[in-house]
Length: 99
Image (tube, rainbow, N blue to C red; front, side, top):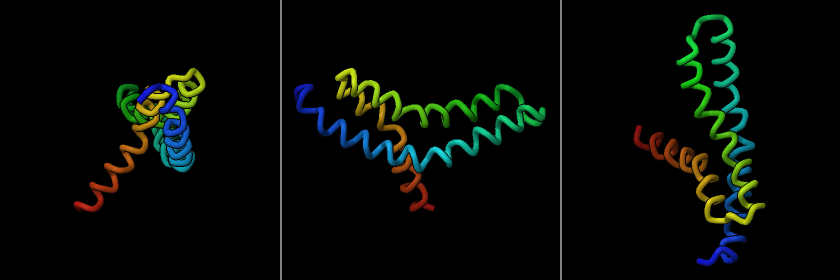
């Protein structure tokens, strides 16, 4: 597909991932806040705190970066960058069905 043909699918995919991102912001923000509080209290070391917080923060930032790439007309890359939150949701649904 040419770059111009990817514009509409990319915008639709980003709209869906943004909705998931808005719903998941609360879910992703809670571990970050709780881990930061545990780090400040000294219950958790810096390494463990960063290992916990970085993936959640990255998942919350994915849709924002993807919208920025869409505005820069990098449609294919925007689709790829916006995909991890949806892929993690699909993976969690699949894992919950197995157990």
